[in-house]
Amino acid sequence: MLAFVVMSFIVEVTPGPNMGTLAALTLERGRNAGLAAVAGVALGLAIVGVLAAMGLAAAISEVPALYQTLRWGGVLYLLYLAYDAWRDAGASADVARQPESAPSLFLRGLVINLLNPKAAVFYIAILPTFIDLAQGSLLAQNLKLVAIYVAVATIVHCTIVLLAAWLRPFLVSGAVEKIARRLLAVVMALIALWFAWHTR
Image 1 (cartoon, rainbow, N blue to C red):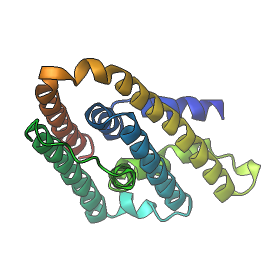
Image 2 (image 1 turned 60 degrees about the horizontal axis):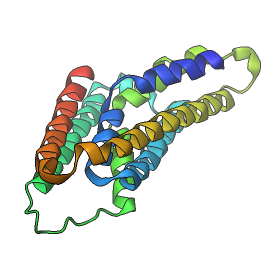
Image 3 (image 1 turned 90 degrees about the vertical axis):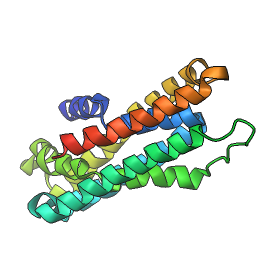
Image 4 (image 1 turned 180 degrees about the vertical axis):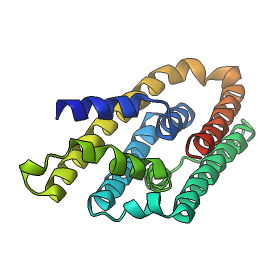
């Protein structure tokens, strides 16, 4: 169990779309926005984990067309988020920014994970190596490991959001705000390109 917790932590602290998106979103819109997205990410990871435990997610790795559809859907969605951030940064300073609702931010985190085939591949390729056939129900063990992984991931993601929120006043404020927001949009686009390369 300890080995699985360590493995989960290593996977989550490795740079990826979740880490980059949550940091950029928090710097752009604040701590509450980041935490709302974290909740969506957690639900997305849990849904994919349950599907994997039931054997349904195996189709993602066995059907190339499905894998590619999810992969490119994720890339396009990340590019859309980058465009959205760039457009907001270009808005006139005299125009108040429309706050994004918590459900909308929650949906962002959820969609990013449902369109991320890497999550399913992790559950299919790595999680089973921690299953002990002598310990009873395979489904129960799978669901237990999924719950542990989601908990570890959520702790890491909350830490990223809180750190980004702490840095926000120094990075996104005053005269440099527009430049900082444009840089965040570029970072989001780079995350999308990295995701496309890493999941090829």
